[in-house]
Image 1 (cartoon, one colour):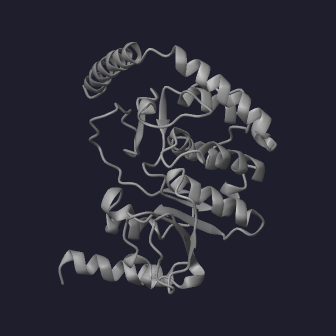
Image 2 (cartoon, rainbow, N blue to C red):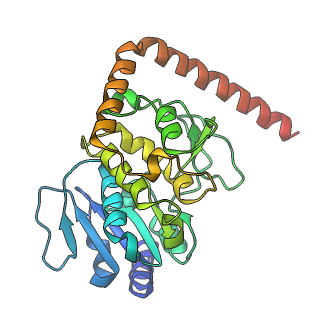
Image 3 (cartoon, helix red, strand yellow):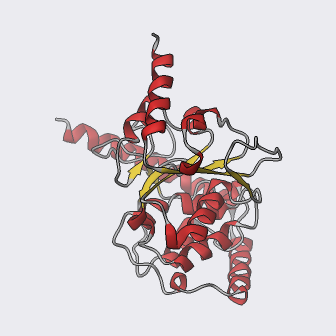
Length: 284
């Protein structure tokens, strides 16, 4: 039996046996792998233009906010009756983010877990070599010009809004693609209003940049002792959102993309040199 067939068999077995509940965001990826899951163990949030087979337990939702919108919908709608553990993942998790063999291994865990490959080599942006090779990146908001920003002009603006009295990080630890195993108590670290507010932030576009900010914050949202801000402990009004929108526009109008991109390139270069020197010194 070759390794591919063996992995497929093991995946089918563990999905049949698992006690996790799966919240799956579907756009244009494959869903064949969920066939071994009981319909009571998963829910697919369908963001595609296609109607899914009636045998697939799914809900049609708006195609906004990437997979983050799907996760937030699930949390808000089930906040008072959450499963003991939830696997939040994308339909293309195997093709884009993780090997089937790694997925199988991690699904045996019942604690907060990043569903990721612990790769040693990353070309961009620069990252710290953590003990477990877990994914992290330098905090530079390098992606912000690619996507629609409505309420926050960069990651730091978002980060300081959702958390209380928090220092801006130099590096950000997160699971790429926002694929996680999350116990109920980790989700309940934040109030329902917190998630409702996040949903408002990402709902303005399929490619909302706020979704990328949230992707980079989920690790701390679900797995830290950092307090939520007062803003996030209550439902944000439409009036407040309008003020945030105007403030964001005003700041974006003052941005000089060329200077910021040049500054980022210098930061990446200096960071790479520093980490290389540090690595050589520590390995002596």
